[in-house]
Image 1 (cartoon, rainbow, N blue to C red):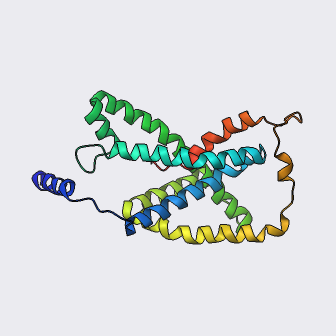
Image 2: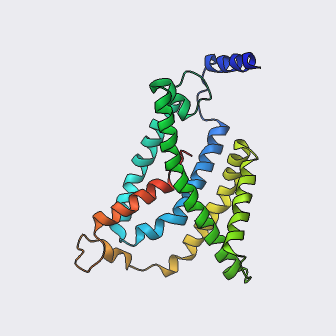
Image 3: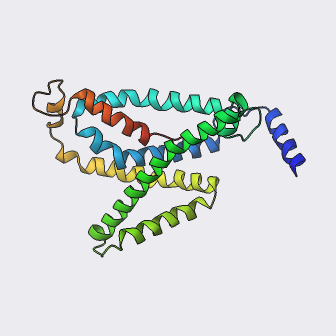
Length: 228
């Protein structure tokens, strides 16, 4: 069995790399787009918008380099391993030894675990609010509701990577459509109050632009973090 797997990996490594855009690239692109927009809708607007329009403009400019170059560097590092299919721990161990592999695994855990906690709380709050305000029902106790939701998510994970990515790439279309419809629906309610915040003057007692960016950029990095 081990010989067969080694032979398959060797053949995959020696096979010429496919060039051009593939169907799997489109699937992953749509899935990642859906996760980025979903995280942004959940966490980003309120945290970023409280500081006015200028921080939003700065963050829009910073979004591409922060997201693209960091993920490209991480991807290239993971792909630098000699064997196909290695994860980040295996590649670190290959380059820097077993001790460094354990350290990067621990650091990666501390980077991912808070994300799981935040999403667990967020999805519980969202479903609880939906049950009470949209459905008009009495929400179950938070402990029971969160347990049901987490078990449901873990059940979805058991279907495997390809099924999850395929489902995400399909769900992104109605999600984006709803966002666009809401944007068009809110056009009559536009006003110029947001433009009044386009100023570096903070004498009114509001947050300074530096403090707003200091608090909002970590939220943006979290919202557009595809490494998990």
